[in-house]
Image (cartoon, rainbow, N blue to C red):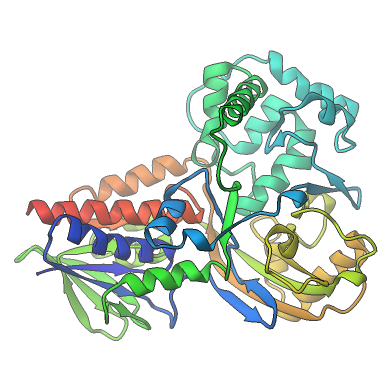
Length: 474
């Protein structure tokens, strides 16, 4: 009987443990799996709360379908009928500019425009800024090799206005990071490839848009929207994964303290916080990088040191519910993002009940605001009451909603957002190289090759594949 231990009960650890169960049937491997979680619940930052007819997400509220791993996992779990697409009538995104909400031009994708007329008409940019962005069509490729910051790339290709007014707040909503420290190769590699292959990023995006339009005309349009969720929130996914694990496989309040190799019998020995020692034939570490570094300090000093260098940002999510009548005008939008240059006290705000159905009663609107991140770390350090007051003040200023919310919640996520800073890929290669001599040890989670739920599912399943195949060979 082979014993596989997964350390960490977030979505990556759950996906890893579940895939171990799938693979042992497929490969006829006589094995058992144990999932260790330090807290008293599974799911990590994923948590859903139902308050009357309101459905609140404490962490992520959706996953992307362009990366198929989470979608495929839902299919295998029988959750496909539970999937919910975004409300198509409300897809507009706003940017705060001069204290007002300005619509992001149609066809503007993260860094650059793909449609000419909406770009010309937008008040987001000055005419000088628009000319500078259009000049990207004629700029040469970058000659230098090596990593580059996302901020440097946008500034070099599109100019300062494109970075400050759109790219920084949009990318900040994903990574809660400083674009001048963020690695282009690790976060937006396709833009680097666009420049390398097509020279002009705008031209490359036009070509991709034409290809997608041709696919739609050919009848191969996507079944799902770009982002999807589950009817009763993302904790449905956590619950479905936990139910597929063997009885007694999950151990809560069982944090790991250290991991050592027993070279006499090639087993791993895991020392828990209560000093209990578990033996395992293979281990998957699905904790944050800083915890993985602490656990591996007796196994690989090199890996432990590099893992400790992967930094994190802290964020808070504040849910507020208002009556629809409290809004002077109900926005038909998914929400808005806030450039740091605007000196506001929130990074972004999502209109949850306008983005997905079933999130609030028909006569109410549910909002989710985001505070903190690398560029506004001091705002996260305030107490919950101060954070809520700041958010309500911003909602009053930007949306003209001055009523007292009918419901409010504040959730904190300390050290939850890995920062893919310049050199991130090289550091991850060093970590993986330092652990290359341990084929029955694998890493998973958001710290290495992508921060989204689909990325976490992929890394968890790849880790399971690696260790199960290794045990099958032996």
